[in-house]
Length: 137
Image 1 (tube, rainbow, N blue to C red):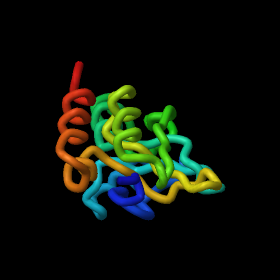
Image 2: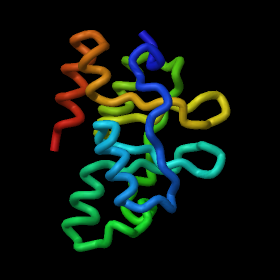
Image 3: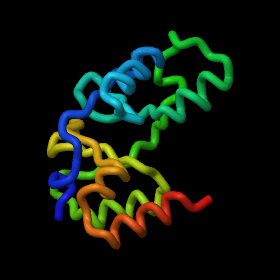
Image 4: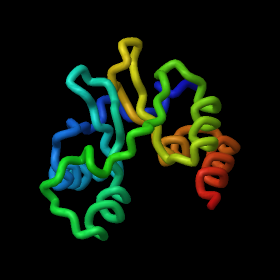
């Protein structure tokens, strides 16, 4: 099974100068927990999660009008649509992340694969390993 078989295609994304309020609205509208942050060419330069907004902004008393670039995770894990799901899961486990941004041959964001996608669509062993290893302290 390949990443393209389980990924969410064309995810909601934002620019680095989008506000955290705008990112939060996207998350609420699409019922998602993370938004890839793209540069002008459509390439991922980060990811902002609901946790980033809650713990990195709200808990620190930051304004909802600051740019997502102030709180986003810059070291975003990427994968290709053709990558094997088990290989992608291994990368997610090693990095202890719940999501990977999927990029096409030009390096542009074309999807996202989340731990929930693996749980819903992949085989049982991959799901168990991913959940256990990502959740380790």
